[in-house]
Length: 542
Image (cartoon, rainbow, N blue to C red):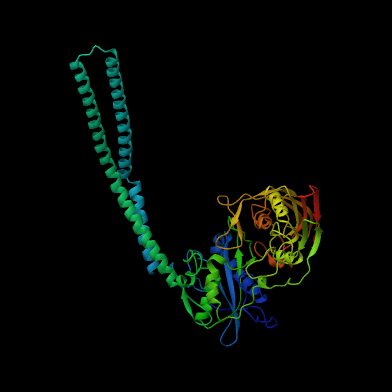
C-alpha cells in the first residue's frame, strides 16, 4: 500500500515531529502526496459521481525500515460500496465483508425490520385497528344516546312528581322504571366494554408481537454495535492496543459514536504500525462538493474531527514526537494592550489576533486577565463581549459591575452597532445584501459550527463589498446577531457568500493568509452613565 513519490524530494526536509492533527499547516511532502492522490482519483471515472458529492481523504508520510520515504492514502468511511481498494490502506475492521459476522448479524436485524414492517402494513393489523376505532366510535354514540334517554325519562318523572297527586303505587312504579332503565344502561355499557375489549385484544396481540420484535432488534443492534467497537483494536507507536470501548469509556459520551475508527487518519496510523512504518506527517483533505450542513471546500486541508477522532488519536499518537498545539502557545504573555478609549467607567482595547478574550483551558494570557492587572479595583467581570481567538479588533470592557450589566443589555437587545472588516478568498455574487442562516455547534467536531435549519439559532449578517482585487473581496460586515463563528460560517457556507474569510483554519484555507483576516473595526454604543453615543474605531491591520 505504500507509494513512493513520483518527483524528486531530496531537497525537502523531513519533519522532526509528527503533525498535530487538530491544528496544522500541511508539510510540503503532505501537499505533494495529496496532489498525487487527487491525480489518481481523476483517473477513476467510475468513482467520479460519488467523489463529486464529497468525501474526505487522507495521506500519511512514512519512513520504511530501510529509510525510504513514501506515503499511505486512505478515505473516510467507504468508497464505491467497499472498504477495500488497492490504492488505499484497508480499514481497521472491514464491516462490509459479506461473509463476516457483522454483515450476517446485520442481515438478521434487517430481517427483523422487515417483519415489523410487514406486520404494520398487513391487512389483518390495519383492519383490527379500524375495527377497534369503529367499535369505540359506535360505543360512544350508543352510550351517549342511551344516557340522553335516561336524562329525558328522569326529567319526565321529575315533572310528574312536581305536579303531585300521585298515588303510592304510581310512585313505586316510577322508582322501578328508573331502576330498570339504569340497569339496562349498565348492561348496555358492559356489552360495549366486552366488544371493545375483544377488539382491543386483537390490536394488542399485534402490538405485543411488534414490541417484542422491536425489543429484540434493539437488543441485537446494541450488542452488535458493542461487538463492532471491540473489533477496532487500535495500536499506538508503543505497540499498545485498546479497542474503541476502552478508548471512549472515560469520555463524556462514554460510548463511541457511530463511524468511530473509520476516518482516514486512524486507518493510516493503524496500517503504518502493523507494517513497521514510521509516521512522519499527516494531512486530511476534502474532495467534491460541500455537505449540506458542514463547510468543506474541494482541495482544502482540514483538521481531524474532535468527536470521533480526538479520543482515538490521543491513544494512537502515544509514542510519537508530536508537534505542540499552536493554540496552546502563550505568545502574547507580556505584550502590551493598545487602549482605544477609556473613561472612569468604560475601557475599549484592541485584541490581537490569536489572543483569548477570556481565560481558556490552557491558562493562556487573555484580555480579561490583562485588564484585571491594569484595573485591580474594577468590580464585575470587566469584558462585556467576546471575539474569536483568531479575530482581532475592538473589545469593550466595564470597570463597574452596574455599567457592565447595562452594556451587556445593549448587546443582548442589539442596540450596539458593530462593524467587522474582512478579506475573502473569493468574491460574493452580490455586492451587498443579507445572509440569514441558522447556526449551531457541530457536536462531533467542536468548536466548528454548522448550518442547521431545525436546531440552529437564527443568525443574520448584513454585508457590503468595499473592493475587489485579484479574486479577493474586502468586505464590511454588520452582524445583527452574535452567534459563535457567525461571520466565518456565513462567509464560507455555500448558501451564504461561498467565499471563506482568508486564513480561516476552520472553514477555509489557512494557507491563503498568515492569519484570519477578520477585524472588529467599529463599535457604536450608548454610554451607560453619560447617555452619550460613543463611537470607537480600530484601523484594519490587513
